[in-house]
Amino acid sequence: METIFYCLDSLTKVLWSFPMPALLMGTHIYFTFRLGLIQKYLPRGIRLSVSKQGRESGGVSPYAALATALAATIGTGNIIGISTAIAIGGPGAVFWCWLTGLLGVATCYGESFLASSYRVRQADGRWAGGPMYVLQKGLKKKWLALLFSVAAVLASFGMGSSVQSHSICAALRSHLSVSPHLIGMAVAVLAGFALLGGIRQISKICTVLVPFMSLFYLAGCFYLLAANRAYLWDALSLILRSAFSGKALAGGTAGFALSQGLRIGISRGLFTNEAGLGSIPMAAATSNAPSPAIQGLISMTGPFWDTVVICAVTGLVIVSSILKMPEAFVKIPSDGLCLAAFCQLPMFGAEILSISLALFAFATILGWCCYGECAVRFLAGERAVKPYQVIYLFCVYLGAVVSLERVWGLSDLLNALMALPNLACLWMLRDRIQRQVILSDTSENFK
Image 1: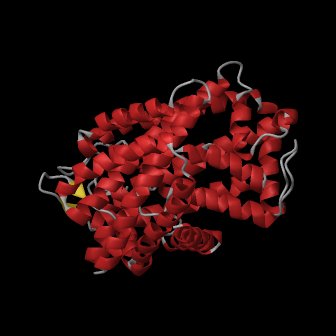
Image 2: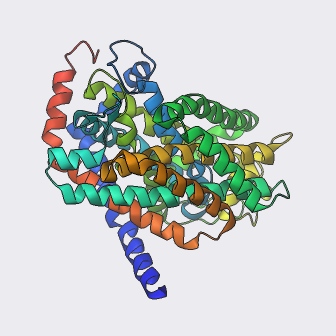
């Protein structure tokens, strides 16, 4: 067994050291230019996400679908991931992470457009779709559809449930002396109540939870930015200079070469916004938006909110706080930079960050359950959804009480097995995506 884990871990390191980041980033750049800098339509996508005009029957609202995707996307990586990126790759990693999110908008449009184009209507009137349906119907590659679906189900047990409950347990136990078994059971019960109503109930919860948790966290960030206002320009300048020079960060944080900051920033951005992974299209396909082009515009705002806004603000908070009080960051572990910055709040800084981490992780549990259900439904039909939910909730409990060293590595490998078939869809059907964007650009729905 140890030999198997070693081989899988070695394969994961090889894939994510260069091939996967290069493939994903290359796809982002390609579709950015092929779709005519579609990022310029971000304001229109934001407006469409809250519009109630022209919706079809069945499905969930476009905003609810977006909120579900954001629930799965906005997670602990927005906080801990950025802290680690800055500690390892220097302040320039923030720029590369931000750029990855901005370019990933184009890929997210393409994969969401395809998912909405090839989705299917279920017996109860709801929509179901995702890369597995595109692979089966659009490319006639059933085996790739099965590979994607199996990887998505297994990834939901790891990254979607157990890893997130482990993060919740760690955040709560840093302030409360509570048994991890109690925390695991409590999180599983709360998630179970949310899952009882299916995608519609989860979407409704996410439409409230996502804006609340984001504003709660960003309120602390904006307070710190206001307190650090005298250092903001220097922080921004340092981030931009370091992105191309690899300049060291003051206050005891290691300085690294340009290649290190670029590699870490890009990899963190790819992990955080999930553009190209194939997860976001599964939420996009449930929407009752009037056309695939409109749903693509709405879905592509997800990487913008996740990476361009939340990750960028987190990075600016950390760098400006280090410049202001470098002595407070000496000998701080790589994943603790954001905590050290929040401790500069006049009161309850550590508690606010812990609550944010717990909320982000719980939202991810809900969002990834939707993805897992979609994949299970494709593999075995509706009858398999309830058993899947039981196993999923057990993984939620299990994640709070066991070590997850193996799970992290397997989750990265499963993410690659999801991304590769999804990227095959995008590249092989790229001409269809481009034509539809050009045609839609002159339609009333796109205006």
